Image (cartoon, rainbow, N blue to C red; front, side, top):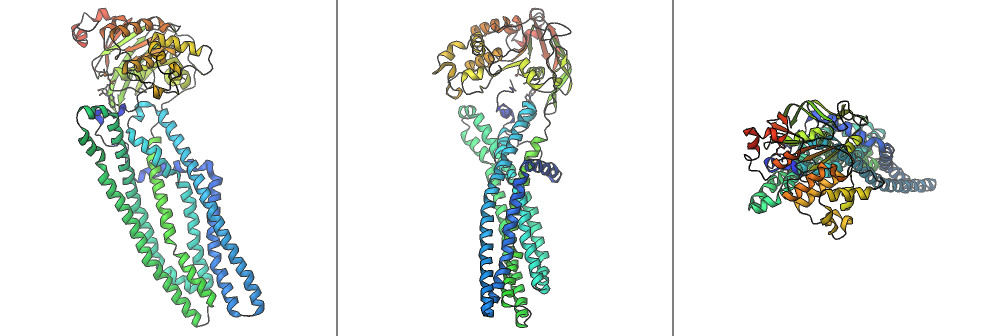
Length: 609
Ligand SMILES: Nc1ncnc2c1ncn2[C@@H]1O[C@H](COP(=O)(O)OP(=O)(O)OP(=O)(O)O)[C@@H](O)[C@H]1O
């Protein structure tokens, strides 16, 4: 079986083990969705973002006012008059107040940045995980699992800092712009000297932003590749150990490390170069401003306090260091947001709001009909114009060679995958029009390798029964007995109350629990995708008999059973023979058995039945 929607990790099957991390690469065209995503993520926290902008701006304004107040204090103290002394005291108090405002704003800035980042990140992660589950196992399968983990964790955390970075970067602009205005107020010539050097500063910032965006994109992609390969290796740990492939796999998993290191070094080089260039340019600008200020002082056109203030404003106006830091955070956040947007752009499966109809137009409840269904995996057509009717309450076995498309047919029949064309109708209603909760209630699934979700084994088995439903526990036990699981569950350390993680289970036992979970659900259709393959022949016979007896859990159900054993097909009412993605025949097993081609599916009749 190449596909089992309930088993995470299977998308990373060995055949695809060495494929690169999927998903389109980032580029200029990806910017708009990323910005839209960040805008939507930041909107619920608008007041917090505005408060952050206000505190950061407050701190910037306080920093801008401080040199003027200090200069004024200095001039008054240098004047030496008694009246001036009293005023100097007031200005000194003003300097102390400005420093206090600056400190308080910084503290508020830290708290607001932390809470804004964490809330935005939580919102992004919630949206991403919800979307991944809504798109269904087939569409999300185009992304490598490790890559998705990276996107949901590291990338979401970086993207979550973007709204805060925008607010901080905008506020950070207040300082250099305000300082330039202050220089102009002191003397226009001081501002002119500074402005003469600013084109170089602008060029430096632009070059930094462009090169570091590329670098950060590559760094994040390589990180995701590393995570993807690690998840693949962990999924295939048994194969690696059995095949003696440890060293080979270790080098394959760690192969992106060299590239990661190169991208990391390049990133630091770019940031270092920008800082070094700024370190040369900024003092030059400051010296030029101070020199012109000194000239003005010697001519009596600027006071000593004015010169002190001008020197400080030159430092603030050239505050590239802060801007480089803010820009760096913004670049990282936007690049990460692009990677999240790629996932969110995968469309969710269409869903309606209709309830499952009471009665079927063409037979008992549970009539399943596939009309002209075409379906594919990653764009590769697998099912071609499949027409199949499963009468209400009947059991139809689906048989065919490996790779014929049986699992995809089962997935499409229960809308775990969406057909590219055609319709799947349950009692005359298109599955696409049904309310998703009603659909999941109506169609139960059991897989070859199920995964148990729930705090305890009992809760995992009851997952398909609404909480609070009367007789829930009794129904679970009856389903477990029908699936031949009750016996071994009761021998677990705490029986049905055993935490799933502490339940030591064999492949066949897990399969029986998957069957019990599906049987416990009160659906009208049951889809079994190779769900008895790990059972011994006697247990399989008991389970299939219980299934034929409506699972012993009440109500006649329609059953679509993907089967590899002739015995399973023989017990079904009808057998759908799938060949190359098309229905070759639909007839009772004994009738099909007359055809050599059909018999050869089961090893020419030497099957275990
Ligand atoms: N995740 C996937 N991505 C791309 N192609 C896939 C994927 N899973 C299955 N396929 C391909 O789709 C085709 C049908 O697969 P499917 O699992 O439906 O076949 P199957 O009849 O159930 O096979 P088996 O009996 O071996 O389980 C195969 O050719 C398979 O290689």
